[in-house]
Image (cartoon, rainbow, N blue to C red):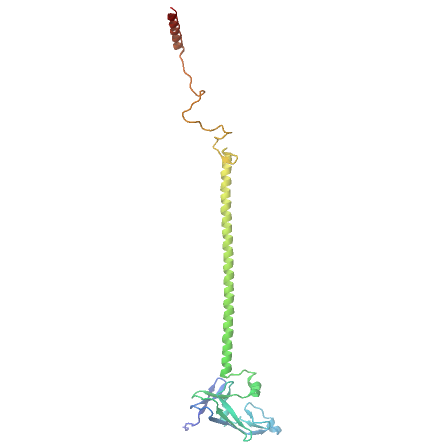
Length: 256
């Protein structure tokens, strides 16, 4: 079995592929690893023609080709908010990666690759660092919240529209019901008037039961009887003759 490494890092799986992770606590300012590889001279056409994503430019002339397999530092990924940085010494033609904050075991080591590298390699595909992923996650959450807000707003609008429509329909039904009720009432009144006319009980718009005629149809006072209404006495003819004879006899006695 290979002896365990004393190095404070290991190569492991990252969200962007492979990455370098701390195996021990790394203090702020501590040297982590050296970035190394063959030096390329930009003045030479052969060197200047080499192109890969592991080139580390020291100055306008010298560049480190870090694509060699022994360069473990090449596994360190870019981060917009890194926990390490590249310490470049152009005169010594040397690059060392140092911690700029305390790094805990299991935490991925990363540094900022610089604006030129970001524009050339990362921007076209989108940066995958934790900070950018957090921003994208936040934007996705905001976009989702906005979609939900618009959906809720649209739903509320549809509900108000449905309520308004239902209210309008209820008002129309109530109006129709009231109109039918009024029509039925008018029909009943018309039927009553027609019946009153048919029975001769309607005069000048008032039902008088046939008793009112130019003021002559008033009822008479109780206990009073007109002379014309008094019954005539009935007299038998025989009784009339006896009465007359008696009256004559009485007259004769008075004369004697």
